[in-house]
Image (cartoon, rainbow, N blue to C red; front, side, top):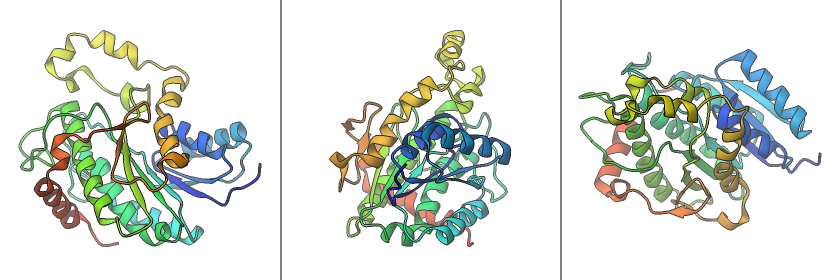
Length: 291
């Protein structure tokens, strides 16, 4: 396979949607770097991607992105290995069944779904600026809806299973929109995509008590949608990320939201409120710990 000279980093790519995204992008001839928490699982993913793509430029970086020290370390390691980064896909996500705090004192959903992509993108800014036209892609989860509760950004007042997960993803969308605006004078684009439903380790770990009350009535049906399917649904769900990472049609587009069919969609109303975005930005900056 002819190398393209493109460097791509995908977080949470040792399984599920991230793995399928990495496989598709490896087939383009790019150098693909993936992050994950488990050495054995990560090495198995690297071996699978190399075998299926024919691309030997696939590397594993161990990082638990719920921990800021690991995000800092991941950025440092990538910066030492490449002098430019063409695509950063913040794919790692968490749907915690209960409100828990990381060792940094951050609510876990907020740490993984909001702070990790924010911090990693900032730490890799020099590498991204060294690319002629870098692309940052952040993945959301669930249909974008609801409101952003500025008094409950880390579920301080209430935690409600998947609703809290969805809230954290909506917060991430607002932060991404604000970030894209602040990158407008650079050659870096930042967009958000919704991959759609897929059977992954995360979705298969969902329990009935994490669902809103009315959905608990159809729990058996929900479980049938996320049963193991050999990666078929994850492969389909990876297409939006792959499209945003590679398509010339979106070159130069930034601050946009794309649906599971890779079509541009309106941002949820809360994302468009400048005061909300700036409050979230201030909290994210305040929550970052030094390397």
